[in-house]
Image (cartoon, rainbow, N blue to C red; front, side, top):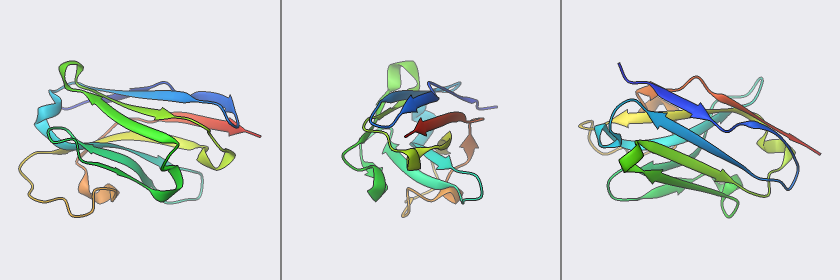
Length: 128
């Protein structure tokens, strides 16, 4: 049973930074893509950033480009999300997700239905 455990959420003022971590119970090479999604109350889950575990292809949603950076440490089976210049609209529950290998081309890497495994989430609150 694969487990993804997020950490690093919290409350921060606008303009501040947070770094999220996602530790996987299996090797990151068990997955082809890992990523971060977020969901605010009353909103659909939104893809924030995803990364290919082997080749390094990275995708961001437009609203976080230039502010957020996704990275991975395959030796530690961990994916990170560095979030800078945070805005109140970034407030949401942030979820780590992973897609197992062998499913073919992903085509839409920021769509939540492409991922098989999910963490429990970590809350990020940005105050103005």
